[in-house]
Image (cartoon, rainbow, N blue to C red; front, side, top):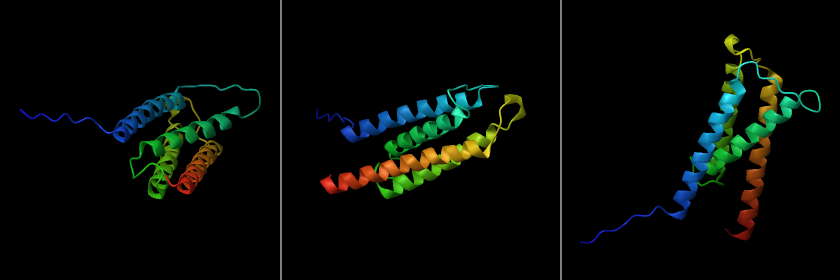
Length: 136
């Protein structure tokens, strides 16, 4: 009897790992950004803006790594992932305007999300350029 065991390729296992981490992170981020009356106190005024930028920078890095829209560092994957990040950041910010949550939706928060997303896209493009120069 000829049985061929099909092992997932290294790249398929890597994509699955990226996707599992992304889904976990996205769920945690949704919970934290919608936690009722959550207050963030930090060493300076509007520390939350730094957290917004960092949170959505990581969200964007993770979705790019998931390679849902092509190879991870393809221009298409980076662009569509960045657009998805921006849309999700907008929906996330809009959802915070639900009165029962006691949260506030603010353009400054969305702008900070956008800065984080732009930073992640820039980092991915630099990495793409460096990889192309090495011939990988």
